Image (cartoon, rainbow, N blue to C red; front, side, top):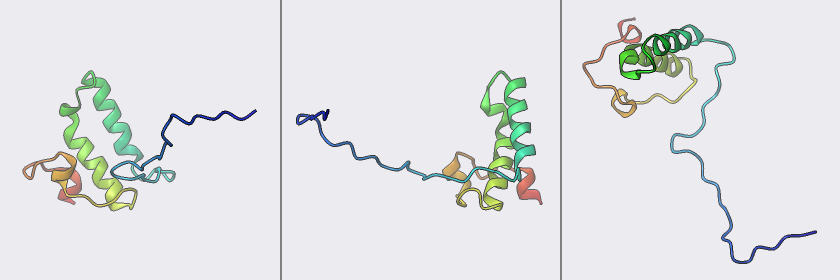
Amino acid sequence: MASFTFSQKKFIPIPPEKGSFPLDHEGLCRDLMVKYMRCLYDNKNVASNCKDISKDYLGCRMNNGLMAKEDWAQLGFSENNTSETEKQ
């Protein structure tokens, strides 16, 4: 039995603004992800307290081709923030 909906517009899906990114199947950045999740847990999910760790995690993903390289300012980090990824 077919259902006809003449009054509805056709739904055209659009991709997310940043696109999709591959999962970390090999666990290249797993240690940083776990460290970040632990930081969130310890700080009652206040992400601003874990900003350095999140920057390290995103840096790991960019360095390993798990996401496109982005300017830190585009990801919400200021120029004066430093992280372990930048020190190496």
